[in-house]
Image (cartoon, rainbow over all chains, first blue to last red; front, side, top):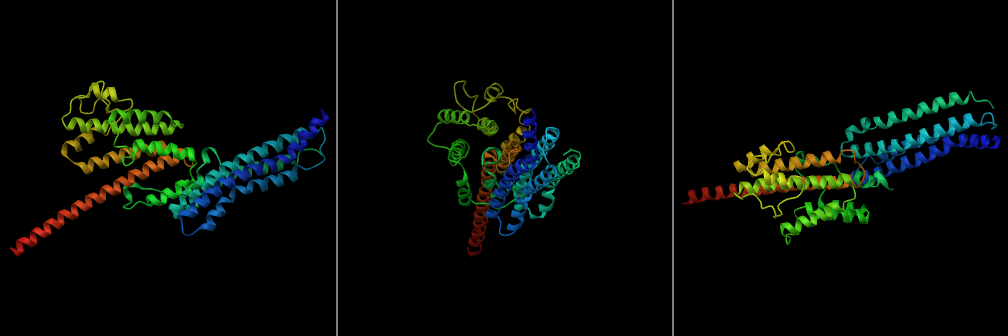
Length: 148
Length: 226
């Protein structure tokens, strides 16, 4: 049982990075394909499209910070807490990144034909980013309460 | 990439079509064909099958009505996406109602029960209600009264525009919620085809008007010379 709690603790510590990276990879790939498609149709603003496509990569950065906040000597006593915070943070970050990628793809697709809506079209992606920030901040707060 | 984001790049590479707002198509057929090379082979075959029953320039004119309907029903049954299947079915149902309006306006009798004159849910209703102005389908197609009025008035251009409007709205409604998948590509192509038809229709009308003006100008000149 003790070994299981330690294993869960390790899973929890690395989940924010692992799951965050999976989400970011999917999100950036989706938005990146939209950016490439938009480049075929437009004559300028390529850098802008690529910049927007990179937005979902922020979640893996939050994941790395949370991992460092959770990193400590893992014991049977703190394993469950590390697992719960880590796995839920990772899942939330992954989900945010995937959907943020779709929102960025839509923003790129819409603004290629109507450049004046570029800023506004990014609002949904920015709001989705807010949910990742909530997860990130409160994971850090709770991580400070775990003994170890 | 698979699933709902399968065609992110393709859809992002296609310009928005604003139908009647644009005088010229934002992408021509050759360029569109180039972009469609990004389609997976099985999706491409499915779209070609759909085009062969809804696109006037791809329908096999060698087919009689019965053969066309058999082929259309087979192709519709083979469409994998429910949204796309419903969209194609709806398109052909609208075409069936318009065809019935035209046939009745041309003085034809109620189609015989064994004759193949249309496709979809409303074929029997149309037969039963042949004498009613809207075939008893106003609940489904509120625009039928306006279509009949334009047909009766001989307003071919107005009728064409109404049909394109109705079909465009139906495709746009079905497209909702599909942004980067096969359905999005299919409905985009349907809307492109409608816009192309309208652009050509305008061009034909303009050509006719130009010819009429030219004839009028030449006849004036003859009168002056005479």
